[in-house]
Structures are given as structure tokens and as C-alpha cells.
Amino acid sequence: MCGIVAYVGKKNCQNLLIEGIKRLEYRGYDSAGLATIHNGKIRIVRAVGRVANLEDKLESMGGLPGTVGLVHTRWATHGGVTEFNAHPHADDKVGIAVVHNGIIENYATIKTLLEEKGHKFSSQTDTEVLAMLIGELYEGDLESAVQAALREVTGAYAIAVICEKEPGVLVVARKGSPLMVGVGNGEYIVASDGAAIISHTSQAMMLDDYNVVKITADGFRTSTIHNVPVTHKVQQLELELDEIELGSFQHYMRKEIFEQPKALRNTFRGRFNAEEGKVILGGLADHAKELVKAKRIALLGQGTALHAAMIGRYLFEDLAKIPATSEFASEFRYRNPIIEENTVAIAVSQSGETADTLAALHEAKDRGALALGVINVVGSTMARETDAGVYLRVGPEIGVASTKAFVGQVAVLTMIAMWFGRRRFMGANDTGSLLHQLNQIPDKIEKILGYDDLVKKVTERYIERENWLFLGRGYNYPTAMEGALKLKEISYIHAEGMPAAEMKHGPIALINEGMPAVFIANQGKQYEKVMSNIQEVRARGGHVIAVATEGDTAIKRYAEDVLYIPDVPECLSPLLAVVPLQMMAYHAAVLRGHDVDKPRNLAKSVTVE
Ligand code: M6R
Image (cartoon, rainbow, N blue to C red):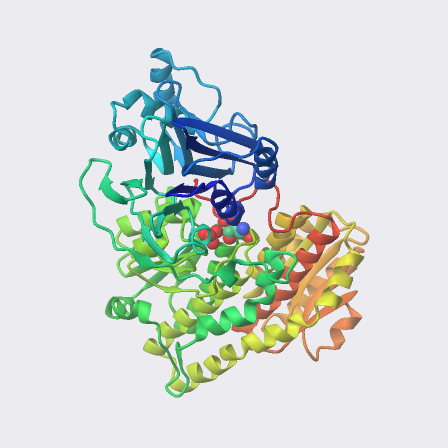
């Protein structure tokens, strides 16, 4: 939520800043703004909408020269989507400009105090309050003023600040929102994500909470908000440029759907010992002794990650025979959860930055749980704050709609459940044959991807319908939820996902002539029951689109459309069943003319509670 790029060095930075912020547009795209210092003056240009609008504006005015600058793309929290509310925000006293990602929770109190001192505000944002506060506390040293201001605020922030009185200085800081400093040759590029840095340097320094860095073209100094010096290692960014480029694909979402076989092969690489039926998870090794004593697993996540966590619950109970729960991290956090001895909390997250999940993780740790992470972004806040964990290794996910991260999360949770199972009661043969099946999932996904034209045709048939149902049972009840989420978030079609059995307890009233009902009807324990639910929908005029197991020709009698997936053990079926649902959502959004990768009102990573 909100992207930041800032530069200090020896070259004019406008183009570099624009190129960088375009790579971070997935973080928010309500408005954008850029500021540089030139001849001792800060100039700010802002525009509502995408970065392209800002670029047009800059071009029409001849651009902003300057070797120190910052740029921002916004996902609105405080105040509507207007140019006044777009960042950078300036103070009214010293000549300071600030970009910010996060939320200053006590901004209203500070604003009142500043108004009493005569400051006049032109936006409704918390960020302008921070800019004014830094200006108010400025006594000739920007770094000290930023430290002093941050000692006054509560909430989350990643900020970059420049000041007319110190034209070669950039000060950045973080607490709760990601920020890193790319270290180049005589230049520094600060960004919310390595994607904005990697084309310039692969060396970067990850900031910790409460770090403040003063940067000039000649070097940097890191301290805390209390001015205690901090030493940081500059490290190699684990990112390749081609991973973040669109290549021949029209959208990141499509690229990421089609990348799933490759992504999963990467997830599995080096982690299977098929002969001994063992899963090798280095990230759990240090805590193996505590983990095997686990009596309860609490899986936490939001959105797509929660759906993966819900599947995780089934996996832990089936494969490891450990009681497990899965729930919205946001609800867990505030409901006084009971954490018994030997509870393992697992935070599931692509970004590792989701505020709700992070807060739940803190809560679980405070109550004595051992915290594991199932996370994609290496070095993210959650990755650093968990005791142990397993990375997804699916590569950067840029499309706002999560796809390859979902299959990565489910695959990693399967491996963790097997890791536990093998140490409890599963024999080498049980795990060995499941590992063999798991290893074949990438090839099977490739086969499903080959049906893309068919999925598109089926989607076209229902594209005018405004209400859809997604229904499944057991392992594929969460898959149905995920199918519905994918459809609604990018095509803006109303869709509900639920256990197929739940439909007759109320939602069945929604079914009318021609309403599409997508059933995950693969062969499994509850196949017959799903068939009955299909009949119930058809009896009321609904049209059934079935995701079924290859070879099930009988289902054609009951479903208007059938999308086949290869046969796999039931516990692995969500990894396949979700793929046609992702493809349907993608085609629906394209057919309806929506911006697939930047759906309205959304941002890739939600760093506010
Ligand atoms: O980064 P996270 O996995 O923690 O994000 C959680 C949700 O915000 C995320 O999965 C969201 O639901 C997706 N955009 C859905 O496609």
C-alpha cells in the first residue's frame, strides 16, 4: 500500500524515479507525485490516477531537474483521491517534502497542536501532518528533525524526506512498512521494494523498525529515532530483472498463472527425499525439537492467503493428525485467542507485510506460540519476525490478484504437514508416494493451462451474468472461496464462495434461471454429495460449470460446462482445481475490459489494519 522511491546521487533523477515507481505501481495507483531539489528549491508535481498521468504532466512542463528527489504512488487511506491529498506533502515553514507509506495513528492530535501554532493544512492526510511536524521541529539538521518527529508519532511509516536547506541530503526511516536502501556507485536508491532498485544495483541494505538513514551522494549513516548508531550489512538482492518484467504477456496475472508450473518446481527443488519419504525443510531445522511436540496449529492469513491457510487446516488434520484452526488474522488478533502450550502459529502471506497478519502473529507470539512463516518475500517483516518458516520461492508476484503465491502456499503447507506427519505416524511409503504425486503437480498444471481457449469460451458464455456462486466441499471448499474472490476482485462480478452443503441453508434463494454456479466436483470422499448439490442448482434453473476429474464423463449429464483436471489424491486437488478458476477470472476481467493487474480500490499489499 503506497510505493516510495527516492534518489540521491550525481545524476538527474526524474527518469530513474519514474521508472522505479512504475515497478511499484502494484502497491497503489490512486495518484502519484514527484519532488526534486534544484537550485536550492523543492518543486513538487502531483497527478490523480496512474503514474502515466504524472509522467504526462512532467513532460508538458519540461520535467523536474535535480540530483535528489522522491516519488510516490498512493493507495488512499486518509482523504479522498485528489491532487491535494497526493504525496509528496510539504511543510509551510522550512521547505520540506515528505513521501510516506503507512498510517500515522495520532495524526489528529498532532494536527490540532500544529494548527494552534498557526500551521495551515491543504490536505486531509496524515502525511501532511508529519511534514509539518518535521518542519516545526527543524533546527538546522534534517536528520535530527526527522528523529524528533518520529519520536512523537504512533503508527506505521516508511518515509523519505528532503529539505531545501540541505539540498544534497535525503533522510529515510521505517517502522512497520518496508523500505530498503540500494547502494550504487556514488548513488543511493531507496525503495519500498527491490523491484525499483534492481536495474541499477543488486546491493541493498534492509532497514529495521525505527531506523533512520541520512544519505548523501558520498555515503550514509544509520541510527535509531533516538540517534543510537546502527550497523547494517549491505546484502545481495535476491531478484532477477526478468522476474519482474512482463515479457510477451499482456498482464502480470496471466504471466503468473502460466508461471505456476515453474514456480512450483522451484518450491520443491531440493526439498524432497523420495527414498526416505522425507521432506527437507531447512527453515524448520533449528526448531525441530519444539515443533514435533506441537499439540495445536493456528493458521493465520487474509484473503487468498487465508484460503490457503484453510486448506492447510485440512492438511494438518489429515496428514499430521494435529488439531488445526484457520482464521482471519484480523479476527484472531482481537478476539482474546486462547493459546495453549505447544501451539504453533503459522502466518501465511505472500508479501510478509500484511498488517492484519503481522498483528495476529505478534499476538500469537506474545501468548507463547512458536511462530512459523509461510511467506514469499524474502526478508519481509513477517519473515524476520517469525521463529522459523518455509519460503514459497515462487518469485515476485506483481499482479494484485494472487495466483502463483496461492499454489505456493498450499504446496508449502502440504510439505510442512508431511514434515510433521513423517515425524509422527506416517511411514516412508505413505509420504514417499504422496511426494511422488506432489512432484508431478507442475506437469499436471501445465496440462490444465493447455485448456485456456476452452476456459475462455466457457467464461464468455456467462460474461453478462452479474451473480455467480462457487461451491465445493472438503479440501475444495476453500478453493471455491478462492475462485469467488478471484472473480470479484478483478472483474467486479458479484461472486460468493461457500461449502456446497451450505447453499441449501439460505443462498439457494439466489439461484434463478441461468445463474452460473461453479462446482468443484473432482472425485473424492464427497463426490456423491456434490452431485446432489449440483442437482439442487439445476432444479432451480442454475447453470452448472463443473471442475471435474479427467475420465468423469458421467458429470456431463449434469453440468452445462465441464473443465477437467487430472486425477490426484484429494489432498492435492486444490493445487489443480484452482487453476481453471484463476483462468476464468482472468478472462472475465479482460472480456469486461478491466485493468486486470490494477483492479479498482485495491493494492497488492495491505499494510494497514
Ligand atoms: O501478502 P498477503 O498474502 O499477506 O496478502 C493477503 C491478501 O491481501 C491477498 O491475498 C489478497 O486477498 C489478494 N490480492 C487476493 O488476490
